[in-house]
Image (tube, rainbow, N blue to C red; front, side, top):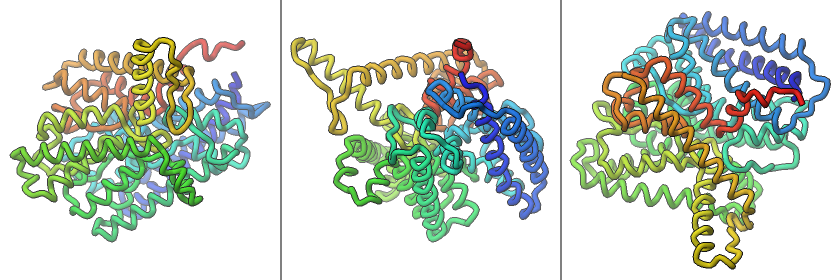
Length: 494
């Protein structure tokens, strides 16, 4: 284990976090908000930690192997969540550190679950816009990944950085767009920034205020879901809701495909099976939910346009794991018919495409699981046949299928453990439905849940919030980095 390169990299992440915190600090100063000093204090703390680790812990070799990559990613995400929470605690906006840590784990992991009530969010919108900006900005930072950001702009990034890139980017596999890891990271971030900028402009043209356009574009880009209004997106006009719905879908698609489109390799891009499965699920789910809503007696779907808009928006929100809501104030997801809620619940598990900013199991992993089941059924009927599995035009090895199966098994064990630990909580009005959907929502980085949790996670005690915080990080980093970092065998010198 190369300890020095691990802590040296954490130091660089600390410096980057300090630099990024300057943006909301300047905003707070410009708006004459009292939180500027809390943000500035956090900048100083992170900068000092970063300088000490960067210059005092110099690695003898910059070699990063698989084990170091996993540990660097896990510790970096724990660091940014822990330090990113300080402005809320210092300013007393969220005085309890565990609550603030939960909020930042939710922000950086792009989950969007919050311990703030709707009334409190509306209050902060009037008094602490800079802190709400930082809250949504963490979605944008976490969407593509804090390590990817470092790799994109650090001149010394080596090719071995691909171990880090694979550890941080979601999906069963991460392919190089170009040979060098640094160049891959730069391309990903240029695409990311470009899409974000286009969405901001589109929302402004549609009539959304400038500040609101930025924070919602950050939330959409990172498929996070933190809003600055109590009713999420519902109070904005239909045009804004459609724009956000479209971009939620776009950010749920593998970014490698966008690079192929830029190179005008349209045929290769449109051959993607994962893309068409993703689009097909959205179309089918939206159609069924539209019919279900049309047959319901909900007051906010009084015409065909409202039915289609709310159906597409919620499907896009759940499958991309963004978590925004178009449901008007006075209602929430609990108002939806049972069939619609059931479909949205299943979409929580599927999530976006591999290589996107979306959470969940990922479409490709779900597809491979289905193909593996089909292969096993065929083997039972025809044991002598090879029954090769093909996906994306390539033969999938048994090793890959077994890896996906092992991941799914571990995923289900963690989900079950999280659910059972939540059931220990004696919070008011908590039910099996609310605890199950909260566990699924946090592990899949979605945010919304059913039952009493639909209004927020503030009813959970400190222990449940810590469990859910780590569940969000485990889900965002896809299990292995967090588990291996806390395994004693990882740190034993060999």
